[in-house]
Image 1 (cartoon, rainbow, N blue to C red):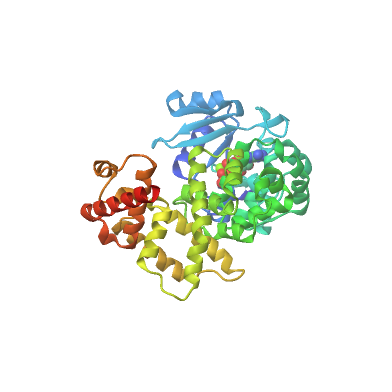
Image 2: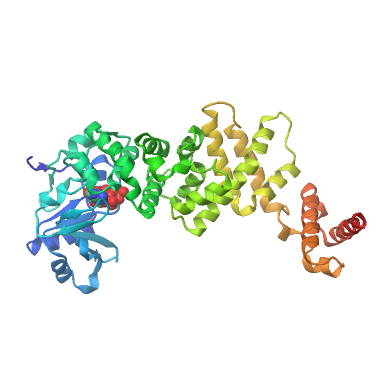
Length: 443
Ligand code: ATP
Ligand code: MG
């Protein structure tokens, strides 16, 4: 296929152009490749412009010097080159995969741009742009596929999936991200891949799932394709029964722009796993190699959603007004820390549920969230907010231990009904009475 003039949307940033120019001036052919070219042709912004070059890693290091280069993946031919702002750009030597086992590849340098493009996964990811000549090199028809809006494997789909099983998941992610279809022979190869996906390490599966949660506006489509292909059952069997509400809630947890990505990811994970009982939830997240912190956070959100979602939905559905004491009790049950996450999750779940039937209305949920925030800022809703603490109780003769815990919890419940009760004198008196009652009933 003849090289074609590039459209105006292809404008790599200045530092990338400078690096390419330096390489070209030294006699090394250099092209922009991969996701940035694809995204620029789609009119989407893309931050990481990767370069592919005929220079070997040693030549790249020699040209830019040790202080401007970082050997980020030397064995795969990748050198990071720093621009004057100390931003790193990846420069990778043209390479070919000589041996693969479905997970790892052994690579060879000293090959052509065409060899390098041929080892890429999908045609839309195998378009090269020469900044020097302002030309596109597109031997596999990637631009036509961008226009047709399809994800299609480079070369023979079954063979490409066998080389690297991750490609099955990548195809689904790219298709869902761009609203593309998957070319039928490529789809067939993905379905045939499913029984072999267990070979992928949990870390790579988790990474794909996370990228899906971060990049895709409608993850329900992606997870639906995982399921349809058989990948979901193979990789995350705990989600076999995940229903339409769980999946659609992910789409309702969208946020425009790249901001807040870690939050979006974690909220979407909570939405996805939100119906699992606690024991299976912990096991599923552990199997995916989620970090302790991620597991704790997702478990906390899911536990609160399962415990408080139903009564809150019930109260919102009833025509009776909800009093402040009730709102404070919910806030206490959720905790200040988890209040925003809980309401994001609950709003998304209810939005998804509204598509199938009855659920609290968006305006009512928003109004309740505003009230909950006001309570959280203004009122005592936590044991630590009480006007007396354990030391005070000990001085009043209440022994530390379970009895004290019980008294403190009873005081909080009492204060949630009426925050005006939260003074040392009033609580001291109440604590003494509670303690006396307890001793009386024991004996
Ligand atoms: P993203 O926006 O998700 O980063 P990307 O296209 O840049 O999308 P990367 O994973 O960063 O994806 O990979 C960069 C390029 O490397 C891809 O565009 C593709 O050409 C090639 N590539 C990456 N992973 C594979 C793979 N598993 N098999 C073949 N080629 C791959
Ligand atoms: Mg990338």
